[in-house]
Length: 478
Image 1 (cartoon, helix red, strand yellow):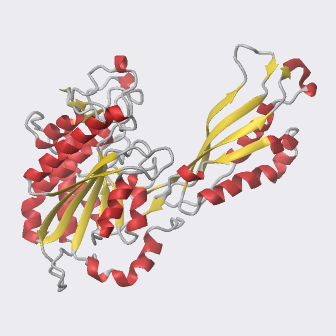
Image 2 (cartoon, one colour; image 1 turned 90 degrees about the vertical axis):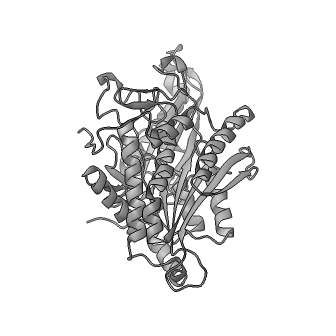
């Protein structure tokens, strides 16, 4: 279905969100794993810091490095903050009663084969109702929409006078994420801040802006199966050991597991084989001497990397009855299991509360359509929040993952093939950029005005109880 746009007459050249998004897209801020990319990362931080300072924001830049045996490269970050009024809750600390923080990133993935792009990846070209460029959907367009939303909301927030709005922006989300958001969150906690709520600006729906709002993400555990065999002629299988047979059975056993640990808003855990390596397509009569598989498990907070590793090993050591009768069952012992637990992404689930309602109401107000709460998709920096602020509510709200190309002005062959996040011709509908600003603005106004959330100072007594409720395993649906 097409988007229901409420703002039809958009001056793309003059719109503040589009102008800022274009400025950011023109900076080739590929994650600076390579030192040669570091200047562009700094430039992207410069651009957003300068913009925020003009609106009166507090600007705190930082650079962190180290902390990992392999991915210790330095990372540029920035923290922005606007304070509207002081505490009206009767406390003496002079701080606003509510603090809402946006988490985003300015780094982008590489462009891939530039020859396949119809525009230059970092030109920020606007045509046919879209802004093109690497990173516009993931997630410079969202960053631009939020900071311009703060500007739009200033009059209302000043009138309410009881809220702090902040932004954490990093240049290392697309790679190791060691010295980015988590380090700024740690610093923020040491500063004595305790945001009540976080908006992660990642793409949160597939096709239509505002159709989904994330309230969590599953974790990710990656690992390998390595199977030893004995190379030989394929016609004499009894003389040799084909490692593909054990590997095929192992994948069948693990893929047959049907998890039931999600809920109506949160997908179940699932195991997927994502890559296989064995043999030689140029040698059709040769049994290979080894086989390998790369696997990925997306898991809910009901699981842990340790429990999943144990499940895999037990499933192969004690397979189900149907697998025990398989002629290759005894070959399962030849499989070496490696689970990369040190790089696993942790899941999180945030019990919907005042922020989720504020955002849903904002989507309804701006677009006239409902927003479903959801926990699908890949990992994001939202997973770091509960380590430092277990009491905070978290949502994720941003542009459509597929670039809004389902709405209009697209070629049929484009859909799913190009235009989306991390794809060739990444793009965002100009109307989506503008409407996302309006949604962010209305969310801020709604959240600041709501009186159903406790002031931060009153939360200390039930921090641990709320943490267990908000960031524990999802509750099962009926």
